[in-house]
Every structure is written in structure tokens, then in C-alpha cells.
Length: 262
Image (cartoon, rainbow, N blue to C red; front, side, top):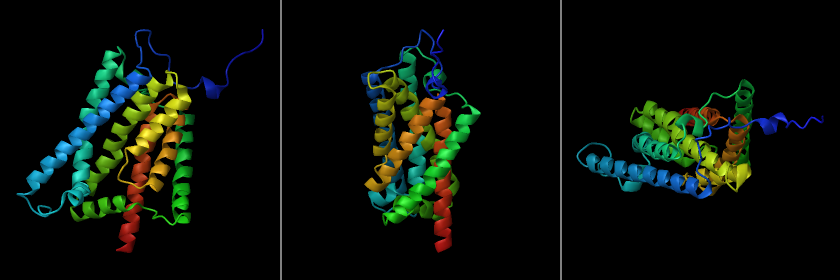
């Protein structure tokens, strides 16, 4: 009999789901992703308002305008950490209503060794290419927003808090929503895997409104690579690790640049 087995690259992907698990398709995934984003944004706004009102009786930033206050590392760190539980609660509710396991739906499994090494190799290639493209385009290697975060965190002795926000909170919230929940539903819908990778990557990039279009383009490319790795490995844990690594590397890079300049 003719061997009709599929290539390993095509065989790779999420493990078969239990019969009782019926993932949300296109519109359901879009609705719940939008709900999670709205809750995430609402919590951040409430935290900013609370911090700004509290600072009026505090020190240092009591007379700062809202824009400057919102870009301060302490503010960014607190809102990034505080918004994670609310967003994850929406995702958990959506998964429960689909009668699925949270870990299985979001593909929270440890990646195979070869996929982990492949992911690390992709990051090792992407980061220098991103810096090179910034240099050739006449753009700063480190975005001004990131530089401001580091300098204000250093002034407030809160680099440790910024590290928690960037390396733990942000990857957790973003990967579980976009490469975990949204990807899972879109991949089994009419848009398929390619559509899931593209849509989740673009939407994820557009969430980074603190950057200009040049750096948003960088984020789209990273999202496409992460989406492909998510499909190939069947593991959102892999992209979560890689996302944390990218943010940690960026933090170390800006620290080196700022400290060297000073």
C-alpha cells in the first residue's frame, strides 16, 4: 500500500482535543478576544486614574500631566501587572463556556526540545536583524518609549518592578490571549492556520500604540514568527518563553545603552 503519511512539519501542531471541547470559531474568538482587550484596557485606565489621584497627595509626580505620568515606569509597571488577572478571567470564562480545559485550549504544554531550539534560533536571528533595519532606516535602535521607561525606573529605583512587568506580566497576558486563545479558535475556523497567524499578529502589534509604525512593523514580523512557531510546536508555552526572552533582551539592551551614555 502507498505510504500517505504527512511530513513531520505538517503533522506538528496542537494535540487532539477531547470530544467534549468545542473551540470558539471565528466570530466567537473575535468576540471574546475583544472582550478581554476591553477589560484589559478598562482596568489599566482605572489603575492610571487611581494612581494619578493618589499622587496628588504624594511626592515627585504630583504635578505631572497625564501623558507624562502615564509614561512613567512605575505607572506602566503597575498597570501592566494589575491588568493581567482581569484579562485572564475573561479568557478563563470563554474557555469554560466552551467546555474545555484551560491548559489544553491554550496549548500550555512544554515544547519539544527541537522546537525550543528552533525558537531560540529564530529570536537570535530576528533581534540583530531588527537592530540592523533600524540603523539602516535611520531609526533609533531603542524606541524612545523604552528609553523613558528605563530612565524613570532607574530614577525611582524600580527597575525590578519594570522587569516583572515586561518579562512576566506582558508576555503572559499577550501570549495567552493572542497565540493561545485567539489562535486556537481562528485556526479551526474558515480562515485557517494562515489566517490565524496573520490576524493575531496584526492585532497584537496594533495593541502597541506606544510605538510608531516602524516599530509596529517589527512587532508584526515577530508575531508572524511566533504564530508559525505556535502552530509548528503546538505550544503556547514556547512563544511565552520566547516573548519573555525578547523583552528581557530589550531591557538589557536599553540598560547598556543608557548606562554607557551616562
